[in-house]
Length: 111
Image 1 (cartoon, rainbow, N blue to C red):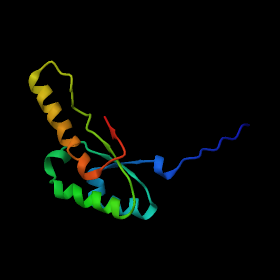
Image 2: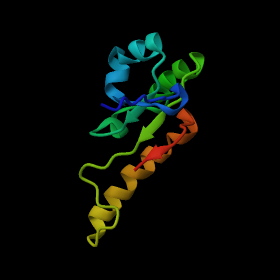
Image 3: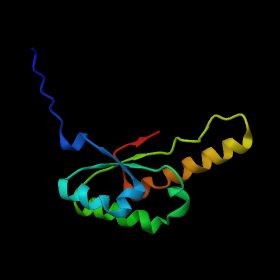
């Protein structure tokens, strides 16, 4: 039987973490274990949080030398919609996600 060894550098590995879970304490686990989050931005998170809320998490990551990626919202979106109302809502939600780039300085944004 062939044995395979996977070599992954920490700098290249990101673990899914919905933003709300990070706020509720999951950030402590990520810091304790040196994990880098792929921050999920689904649901109402983009409508219910202030920039200062996001900054707290971003600052904790930087203080602990952890990078992140952002996973832009994708449920319920149709950024190529023909219906102008659906198109507007979809683009607005993506715009809100992209505004967080300056706060988190992610290694990548996944769409």
